[in-house]
Image (cartoon, one colour):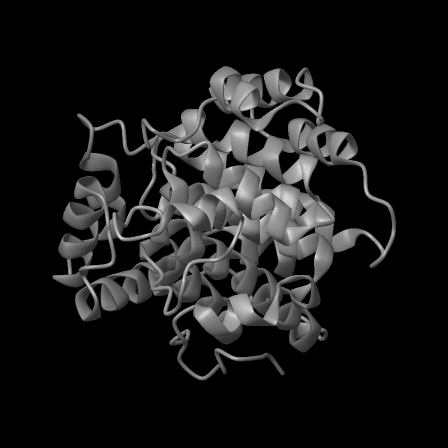
Length: 310
């Protein structure tokens, strides 16, 4: 695959959703801290800066770097980038399985054997493939088939289980659908969920999306999370359906999406990263409060400005 002639505009979209993903990640991470005042939640006042991001953003930045260089998901290059970024900043909140995989990759072991070796040889079905994938949906948004293919390739590097891959596919398709909509148009969260359902492989994730479609978008978020999961189990199945629902319920308002997603607790940083990336696809970077972007720790991306995009 050659780099597309519209590579610059594709990267603009990828960077916009990266901002949404990383702001969501950093925002959500603050609520794991016991020092956050209760009034931040009760009055919906953002926590004081600086908001440090986690492994969600680290790995998403690795994806953006590979897209910038190759215009596609080169799995070998992505594995190397993941390993390098992990070795440079291992204390970003990586899970134990991710630590084993990324440490082995950083030591030069082949990612294909390492990724498939965890969980008794089944591969990981965690939410890590989904948390970082939004830039792929943005970059390839004009072709859902390519979104599915590239998202699956990106997940497989660390999440070889079919559900880990399906979770990434679902989030990428949701982001792509949002990026395809005219800016300022009235968006239907139900139509977004239906598009995701059509393109997600059969299995537990797809069944979770079917269940999300049955939950009205004006439902209290706690009720939705009780039905769909809130990421407490760190699995794709327990995370992705609720995040898709929360994004669908708040497609036109980034801050509302963040507060609603944060309030149900669970894997808060990852939930907010997933929802933030999807919603930023709908709103553009202009929909993210500038103060929130300024509160987030500066992004570190090789060859790309973390404050904007070309």
